[in-house]
Image 1 (cartoon, helix red, strand yellow):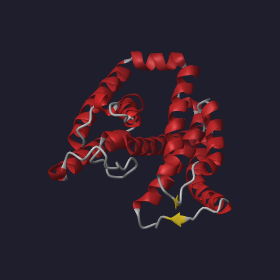
Image 2 (cartoon, rainbow, N blue to C red; image 1 turned 135 degrees about the vertical axis):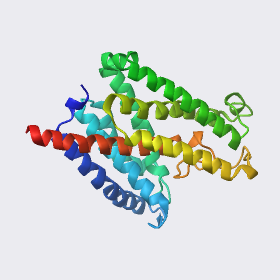
Image 3 (spheres, rainbow, N blue to C red; image 1 turned 60 degrees about the vertical axis):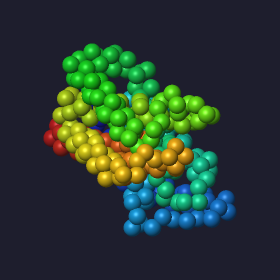
Image 4 (tube, helix red, strand yellow; image 1 turned 180 degrees about the vertical axis):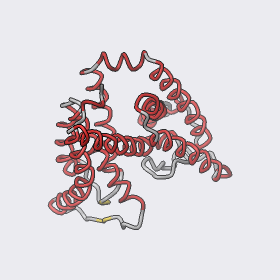
Amino acid sequence: MWDSSLSARGARLAIVAAFAVPPAFLGYEIGVQRLQDVPVVVRPLASADPWLYALILGVTAGGLAVAWGFGLRVAPVTGCLLLACWPWLFVSTRVASPGTPAIPFVGLLVLGAVEAVGRFPNRVTAALSQTDGQYAVAAGMGHLFVGYAIQSLSRQTGVVSAFSAGRVLFGVLVCVSMVGLAVTGALPVYLWLSRQLIAPLAVLAGWLAFGVSETWRVASVLPLTEFSQPNWISLSPGPDYALKWVTLAVLLAAVALGEFVLRRLPTETRTA
């Protein structure tokens, strides 16, 4: 079972990494930019961006520690190297911007999923063949349908038209977002049915309700023009609900890791 793969020591390491990496990475990013003579503009702590920045980094670091405890090796090692190199590769004058760690988060999420399927194909196949997995897939398809319906109210751009007129990048982003919607809809249901984790399902329900509410609130100015700049990483799910799946994935990962690790600690302490 996946649960038995994470020891109390691994759970504590995940907690330490989640809280220690964000401030360490912020100081490291500022130092790298000063060495590169890049003007440094730190976002004020009163705004939401620095907190989302810290949350993404904390989830990434804690997730890498948990992945190591589960027996994955490629994703954790690559993640450590990527975090060390990223401030040198991704140069931005806006320090503590959530867009900086969001790209490594998505890349490592995909890499971790691919490695898990490659290392434990029997477990993945068994999970999908069981009733819990089938319900989760159905929930993912439902979230994809509803999310894309909400997105269609924000912009009159479909998957096919997104690739036209030279907008290939936007078309790719739409396709990636569709996969993201399906995964973020399926994972909370699977964790609820198979691991009795309640927090991810509550976050998904709240995010979806918030997205519908936000889209409805600005309905008078919709649809947005095709050339207006979307805010991909935002704590507000609407408009552009489908394009903001990364924030939902971060929130789901944060509450799932938190609930799972906190449940493991007392169990390991009693059996020690």
